Each structure stands twice: as structure tokens, then as C-alpha cells.
Length: 367
Image 1: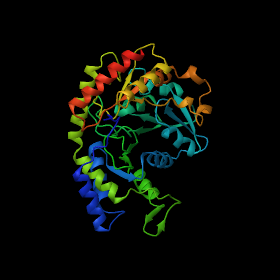
Image 2: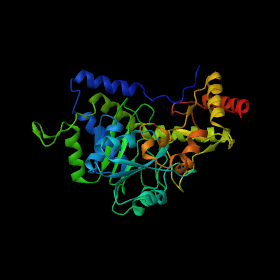
Image 3: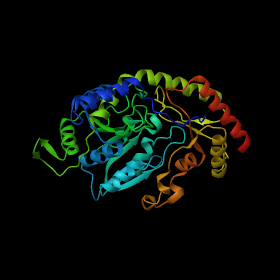
Image 4: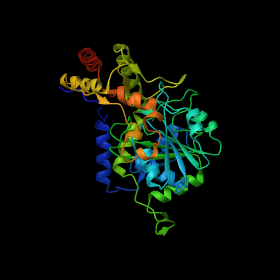
């Protein structure tokens, strides 16, 4: 049987909660989304949490609430899923792609500061694969620039100073609850902040621009999260600590079994939720060899994926990288040699060991 790259951790409690919503007839703007928001706010140490349809919508609404528009520049890590940069482009602003650190895979405060110009309005600090970025240092390196923390992958992760991912000092943070995330609602997103005015603007924006029923303050989209999704998310949040314990133990087991791979480094005392267990194949591995390795793993009934994307290589974003490959040696190297290994919190030790055996065998065949 194929060992999948990721499997959502959904069980009877989530099914019961969703069924209860369906029986109630209250499918939108009910108590379950509010409960889910309260749990996320508490977990991220924030005053406000605003649930929305998905993580990309959260980024788009967040940038709009921060006033990003034509003429503005937004600093975006080059190594990531395209949503942050796409959101900037859709706002009419210019994404400035910034290379990442070769060990931690997040953009450093120094790199952000070097990319700043007079037009820089926001910096998006991404917690790549759940590994907390150095948000406090980024904020200190960019006085006068709003920091939006893209914590899409990082619910439950803890920074080196003991604060949760998604918490201050970023002005605003966004989360995602896609099926690949540790907490999933199928699709779903959240914005968290301590700023009352910002939270009010976001609640209005997600609901057709309504301040109160029938009182339209702006032309807004319907970006609400459904009650079914809210109920699933509420149960997932109640189970989060157990899921984190299991993921971290499995990740450690796999790392120990695969010493020939290089894994994402952690800032001192930080604790990732291991949303994705990424690894680099041995130095000198070519992209063709990496691709052959993925095929060899699949032949052994283990699904291993490519790690991520270097945004400067993607056609919609290449125009924002005038230096091309020369400006992004780290993200390029990580994408070319990087893989994502199977990991989910209901995986048992025998499955993890079988996956590790397949990886070792495939690697010996290819590299």
C-alpha cells in the first residue's frame, strides 16, 4: 500500500461536529466559527482572530487592510508557495523577492533590510514548513515597515523566545487550514492581530463590506468560513497538542534514520510543528537525480514530493527578479535538491520505518 506524503488527521469527533452543524440548519455565521476563532486567538496569543475562506484570501485581505496598493513594494521570501507574491500582485503592488537562509530556509532580517527601498510598505515573514521565522529580528531590522507573518504552516510552532508563531511583534499574521496543514478544515484561513481597528476592518471586509447587517461600509467580497469548517477546526484545535507531540516524535525518528540527508535547521530553542518534513539530498545531487529519486521512491510505494518553489523561476513572477538566478542562490539550491518526506500525526512507527527504508534504498540507486 502506498505511503502517502500527507494524510489529514480527521476522525469521528470531526465527523460528529460537522454532522451536528448540518442538523442544526445554521450553516454560516454561527457559534462554531466563533469558537474556532477563540481557540486560534488563544493559541497564537492574539486579541483577535478573524476566520476566512482560505489562507490565500487571508493574505489578500491582510494586505488590503494594511493599505497595500499600486506604487508600494512588499518584501516576499523567494522560497515559498506562490500565494504571498500572487497576493501582492493582485493588490496592484510590486513583490520584491528576497533570498532565504540556506540552513533555516526562512529569509533573514539582514536580507530583508538589504532589500528595503523607499517604496517598501510591508514585509511578509514566512514560517516555512512550520519553522518559526525570526519575526522580532525582522521587525527590528525594518523600522517603519509593517510585518505580516505568513504563519500558514505554523499553528502550534513556538519561537526561540517561547512565544507562539503568529503572535506579536508582527502587526498581523495569517494562517491556513488546507488539508496539508497540521490543523485542517478542508479549506480555510485566519487572520490574527492585536490591533482593534485592523480587526474591525477585516471583519467588515470578509462579509461583503458590511459593518452591521445591511450597513455596507465598503465593497467587500464574501470571504466567510462556513460553520461546517468552523466545527471541524474547533475539534482539530482541541486535539492540537496531541497531534504536535506525535508529529515531532515521528520527525525525530525519521531524521535519525536518514543521517545522509540535511534537514531544516531551527533557530535556537524554537520548536516547529513539522508541517512538512523537508530534507536536502546529498550535496552534488542534480535536479535530474532528484527527480529520478522521487520516481524510485514511488516505485517502492512511498510518496515523496518536491520541496517547494523558487518564485523567481515562475512565469508570473520572473519579471520581479531582474537578477535572475544570480540573486537567489539559496532558494535555487534548496529547490533543486529539496524533497518533502511522508509525515502525518496518525502515522505509526512501522510506517515511518518503512518510509525511511524506501528512501535509503532509492537514494542508493540514484545518487
